[in-house]
Image 1 (tube, rainbow, N blue to C red):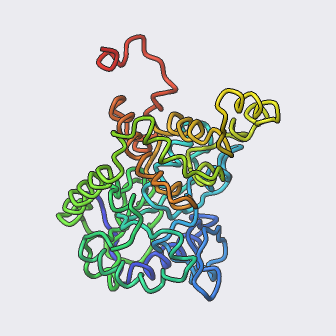
Image 2: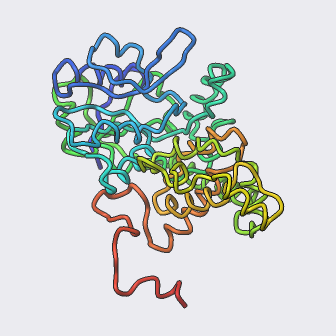
Length: 369
């Protein structure tokens, strides 16, 4: 059983105290976490070095304004951090960052990863239209009971991987009825243990996979299958693909929000793919009619091909889609199918190579048959 640091304070206050301790004891140089940025309650990922600013940190606020993996990649694209940083992120964000590290898009050195048993997040539109604040109390009530909160992202409702695999520290939230009075901090690694050395609190033994956590895994598996049945990805065919992706307006927002999409210049934004007047003329001569912008189906199939093996189901693509295409469900279904072929779970193990980057003389024999 892992060691657990128990603090007799609510989770939010307890983690703020942990982060303050890390900064003031100089165990980390900075803290990367969600922070309130105005009086209306807007939040954004922020990098903080002043302990006084930690009072506005909302470590597990149920919103993902951006996938943290993409931001951490920006910090470490050229090389590893020079000084340690504590990062508070969700399990899917940590998994996505591990995938980026495997693809040489970041470094793990000098990060202290803090995560939680995740209850999911609400769609971004709720923060925009002002609905979010009234949802917060019911979110935490659902967390205490070990269930899904109503109205969270569809992808979150069906996420079975809500326990972090690579966190140094995990904060227990799911099924903890006293999280407004007590904070349980699981110390998963030597780095995690050393980071809290000297901090006030009772060290006990604990089990992260409680009955409530196991029950929620079963509930989410059912929700995921329900999502798949509703979208009917397996029945798409060419007609279904055209009808679904034909709603795309070509904004490329899904690509920009996706933590795994990292190309400096996307093929679909390059001059090679640019439609010039004579190209339109040739296509019109052949087809007598042409959708504008063109090649939306090609774009989405290209993304599915590139992303599926490393998709962590974070839901950012669907959350930013103005055409309400169920992108996250489609990517999750296709992704799981591809990942099952390779027996690969993205972001679980930093030492396990991405299947498409390796070559085996004999592989996929069953698929070939």
